[in-house]
Image (tube, rainbow, N blue to C red):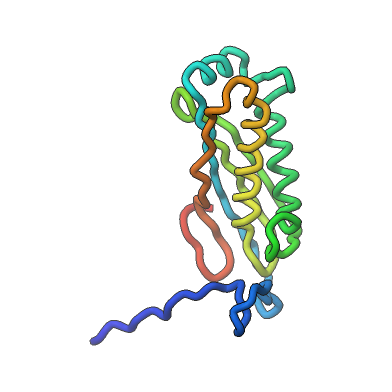
Length: 165
């Protein structure tokens, strides 16, 4: 039996004339949706040692605590930052910040909603804004701090699930 070809994927944020447009989700079912994303912050060795010695505290305050607050605020305002994101009720948001090896922090953001569209952009925004906040709080120590990669780890709910949400 011959294999059926999958239809080609297309960009969703374009109208029939190829102009930018918000996706119409009005006909989609309201379902529970989750997404997880991460972003890493890599420090020069001497900076990482200094941060470990300080317990991730800076003159500006607790680095982890401030990053979690900033990431949570960003999740709730994603639709104000990304032009075609729908404003969503956020049912849950969790950020974690942990050392990943000797010189990197791993920031993970998990977001939940019950709605017609997913929360991948909210999870990515939360993780990356938390990483930017870490950079802001540590830049006095070095401008060689590197952010990324940022990526979606998984999503659940809606048409296409992948990874572990």
